[in-house]
Image (cartoon, rainbow, N blue to C red; front, side, top):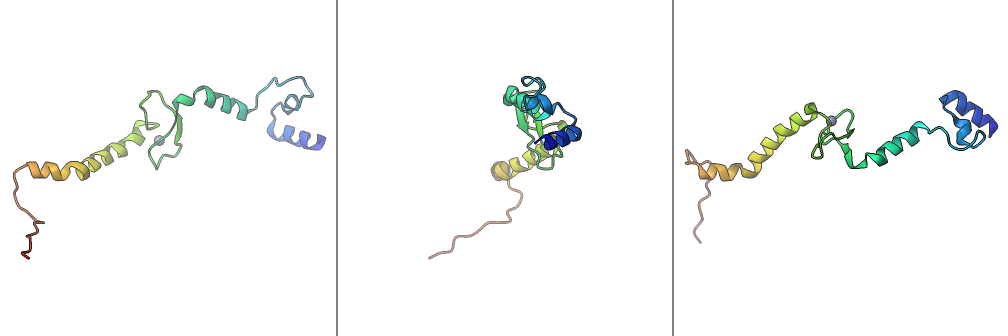
Length: 111
Ligand SMILES: [Zn+2]
């Protein structure tokens, strides 16, 4: 155990001694504990970037409705949103405007 302690100390360079209680109570937090505390405190703002190509998708939102870590990540999604709008509403929109030509009209077969 002592050997292990020494190797972790030299390896990480963080106050491992205090963590194990040799040196009084927990005086110094490990990086992991700090990160965890930050996450708990800011949990309501913790987000996962909705851009599947995002290089670093975990972030803390500045606005409540923020879905993307940056404008760069939001751009392709806005383009996709427009594309999806056309898929969902395009047919209706085309129906409502005067027909120039019909390509997919199926005639009812008699019988
Ligand atoms: Zn992102």
